Image (tube, rainbow, N blue to C red; front, side, top):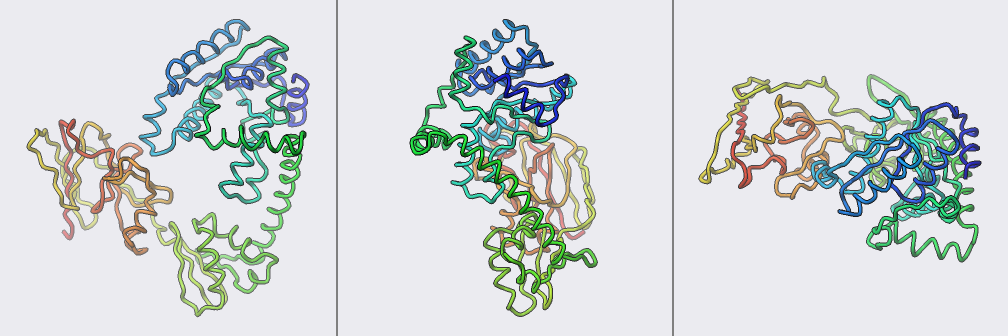
Length: 443
């Protein structure tokens, strides 16, 4: 294990005098990582996240890591998170919330402690599991390359070692470790793969994990060749004119793989696989056929598919600093704060937004839509929805998208003005004070 880490640092030209943040959950892989880095006398600082998801078990993990670090004289920090509240507020899964929280904190602490890298304990079994997950969900060539050993400041030096080898190291050094009870639950996709699929693969091929690692390494080089070829083809078929991207139809059709080339060109602009198939089939259609995705519109011409940003505009933002009256373009926005009682009736006028004042963060920001915007529409029980999908449901035209105003509190969109407020900011039985905002058009 020690040789594996030394070889990893050498292979990736990482100075052994560098500083390393070690992510430590208390499991066998992270304890092995922490012990090995300490044994190699590297400059380290351990970080443990308590996500408060497993009650006493989470606290026992935290205490175990603290005792381990005290025993070996390893500096460490712990942070507790309200993961469920964060996931609810962001409208994301618990798993995604935990990932965002830990990596944001790791990077924050890396800078604070003046360290160079963040080291995590993913191993060969994780690599195989991730590969299967990507295949099950659908993936391109990138997803077949598995987990990258180095990504930005994040290092994964144990990807070449199996869980069995990690357990052997633990037992050899009498280290002890914590086991997450949820790892045995078949309610999770990764656990189904771990307990039901990987064992069968090992029966077929005892060296299955090594085979996966070798295939992933080979496919990483294949991906590089693929990217090189795609970039060369893009240069041949794409040109720019007056702010528009022109895609030569005949040159695209003459490429070795027209669909794949068009997919790689258009996917970054928000076009999905079905749309791209339709675009390719439109090559023989009369000029004028249009396809819309996110902020972009693609129009079929005689020679080119013409792609342009339909929402390109100055990023105009208006701050509403307090209650009062604001004149904005051709509208007046009236903001009124009000104490309420049980007899209060929430206004039903679409041009009036009524919010729980205690949740509001001033100044409010009035702005237009940007790609990636989302909110939790009223009535959807805090379910996250992209604004692009919301607009599609309302059958918005490109102009309606461009003209639609959004009201933002802090980082949250709380009102698609004239259409729907955010469920998280609605007036509830517990609300004591409200903010009422009226839009008066046509002044």
